[in-house]
Image (cartoon, rainbow, N blue to C red; front, side):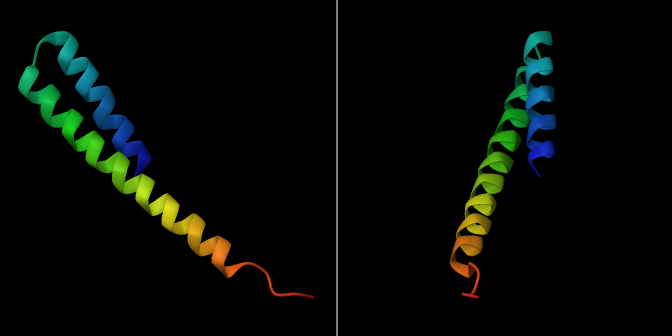
Length: 57
């Protein structure tokens, strides 16, 4: 999912440089949403892994 966010971010940068403001805004918005979804899923995975832990040997 992070790769999709980076892809849309690069599309937004290229579109902004070329002057396509509506495409740049849409791509930047999608990249932002995907990045925050990725961030939340990463935090959930980290918390779940920390809570699971290892049983005492």
